[in-house]
Length: 127
Image (cartoon, rainbow, N blue to C red; front, side, top):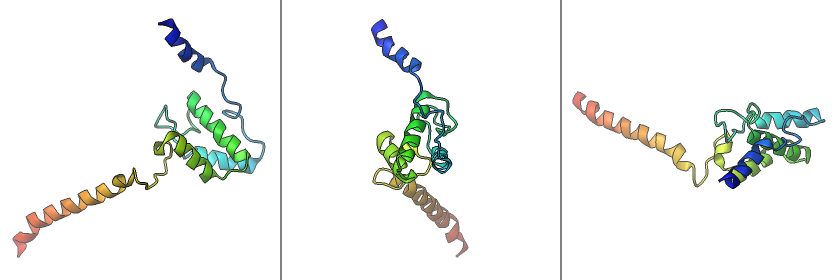
């Protein structure tokens, strides 16, 4: 049983990624990275951005954002890479895709159905 717990203990004691808490030297790159990090969700905390979270996973994601921005990638390229790696949920900016389109269409369908029911119920009585 102790063999199973060892990898879990190792994850918690691993040092943070170098750029998890250290800013980039170029102020423009750091500003772009910080702006992007504010729009990415911490997968462990789920209610905080990776910029605000102290979770080790958020630190790893901040590190990835910073090194990719420093390497010259555009923020949207980094966002796309993180979404490909962790799924659409990582981004606070929802994207319409083959998997997410019902989330955008169903509320409209429900509102139209409710409007039709109300119109049939109350609209015919006036004529």
